[in-house]
Length: 241
Image (cartoon, rainbow, N blue to C red):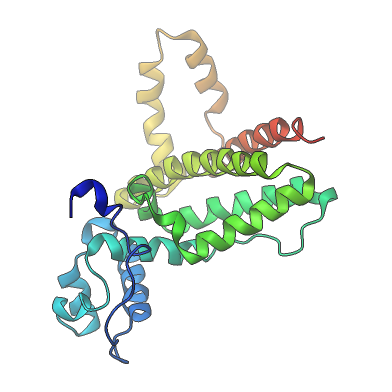
């Protein structure tokens, strides 16, 4: 079949085939892969290593998952299952409910920092059942608030883009922090002299750094995320009838 007719290769576009072994189901494989990813990161994941943790050969895994990319797609959707969205949207609380979902998405990404390195590569991850559930619930929340269906879809895309953009940057920083073996406050204090030296010729940056020095870095991250989220919600609010 010509390449242009094959379509995207994804676990969500390929039918499940064959009989699964009760002791080694796809769900069991994904669960162990998720533990490996959380413990050791994306670079540590391989079919051989995962098979060793499961007490099975890599060949056995291929009966359930075609390749490593499919395994990551499944793990990503498993993580999406942690995102919380209200099941009973109220038009009078749409902003609070939307913000709660945004915070839940951010918290989910920060619990699984490896996710930040694969989100841009998982082009078909939006077809997974957990992301479909979250998307449907969010669209229901926004349409209940009064957004037309087409605008609700764009609003959701804007919100998700903001949250994932901020959270992936945070996740990358937290990964660096974990590798350093230091707590966040200590590492930030050690970095300040270099940052201030670099900003000597840039008065606005220098002033900003001076104001930030001594602040709790975790609180600063929380406040920065909340500021941006509020501005996104401000913009969306102007589009309501």
